[in-house]
Image 1 (spheres, rainbow, N blue to C red):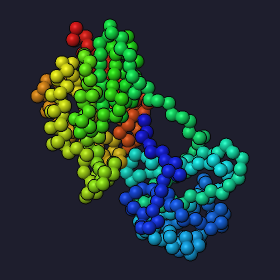
Image 2: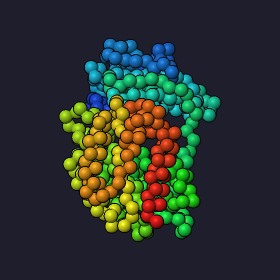
Image 3: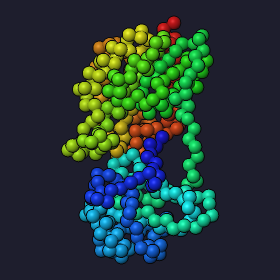
Image 4: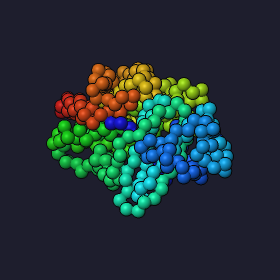
Length: 353
């Protein structure tokens, strides 16, 4: 499942009082309007690319050029100008792919009204950001609720299972439920369980007061990801001021605390180790899953908790079930993981009888 950030331009704002933040991959510039001649130089499918002040001077008045040069550092940034005439409801959106350096894909969605209006959008991109114009899109439909987050009505005749984990587990929740239909009530917290620090804060509410027969749990991908000094998500691992959200020593200590709490439920506990970080992922380093899994293995060995090795399962099939340069799985990958999770849980339930 490709993780992408979809942003509508009217939600993005840029300050013109200082140079645009060079750490940001892309920003829409407001208050900087090109001259009318830009409609001959740019379209919505082929934007005008400006890499110097001299090029910008051909398309902006002196006033707008001054604003632009106060905002953009052409040594480190590039300007893109989209221009077209169309419906007043036309929208131009972009998705920021989870890779590093970042990749930006622009998409156009035509409006439904027949009025003809001029549209210009001026962007500043960090120079190392790759970009392209993708396929046109229809206006986005209203998103349906994620069925993985649906509340479950228990069949009192069946055992209760709790899945704890991040978006990887969200992806395999429904396939796991389907595989265990008529065999178990499969629940999960109605949230992404994030890093171990979030687990420490919320574990009591996730467990609740009910009886659990099996708890299948994981933390890891959100612990090992890199954050910037001001909380920027998925920061460059090579930057001097970025660090992992939960460093490995603290991760191991947090797992100790979480396992102690989970053991109080008297449920059969199954640790699911952390799935791989493919090469090229933004904000994470390939190989860190193995390092964090080794730390987790020490905790699980101490407490005699079995490990469900989805790391090896996923690594052996990475090219078939995972997205490129992305920790997330293709839909068929999440289905495959769900079947594996269901088999492990069903075996644990049988052993508990």
